[in-house]
Length: 257
Image 1 (cartoon, rainbow, N blue to C red):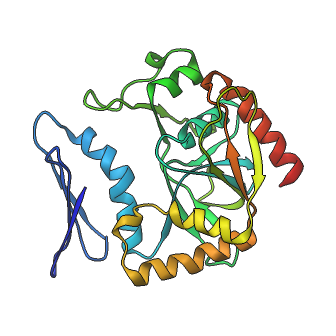
Image 2 (cartoon, rainbow, N blue to C red):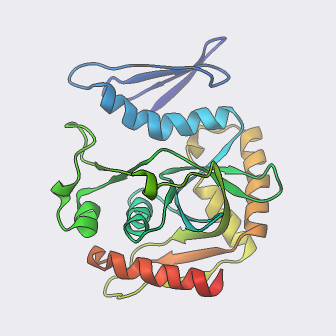
Image 3 (cartoon, one colour):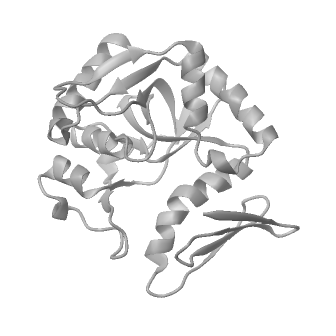
């Protein structure tokens, strides 16, 4: 994605496939254009991810590259990590186990009340074929987002999605590289400096930040790491163990968080 600032007219963000977004300076308005064979559904895949993250940054809202699920009334856990680390797969696994989702991929963080919370996102989890297969037995059980994208969409029903606008963060799990031959997840408590550094690394659209924005984000993330436990999470490499991994994580949360 290429980002250009246009004096008096906000920002222009363009993709190699010809899709272009214009975001007003206050992020109050977003326009999009695309060319055939791409459609509005293709543009929405960008809008619900990087464009939304960029717009929230313009409004001073820090977002983590994370998925979140509600593990108890008024309490959520975040799964933070790089692309394809397993964030969305874990969120889908927890939803399948009866835990409502809070947000997926873009996790806006609030600290206005002095208690870190995560904002509710949109009721859709996007999954690669392997993750859809691990969840439902076959990837074709979920529809593709569009014919031009490889990911599939798990649309969440009312019972699968939190009704709360903000949910208090009880724990942040930072996903590590998967471990071959492992049969259960591994957990390692992270210290303050290490936790902050990982959170800073996993802010959303961090390559489009200026110095002042990064300074504000660093201050907020220091506060988050100081109030909420941060745990390094290593998942088994075998995605067929998804259900078992979610059960072990839920047990860890119940006993330690």
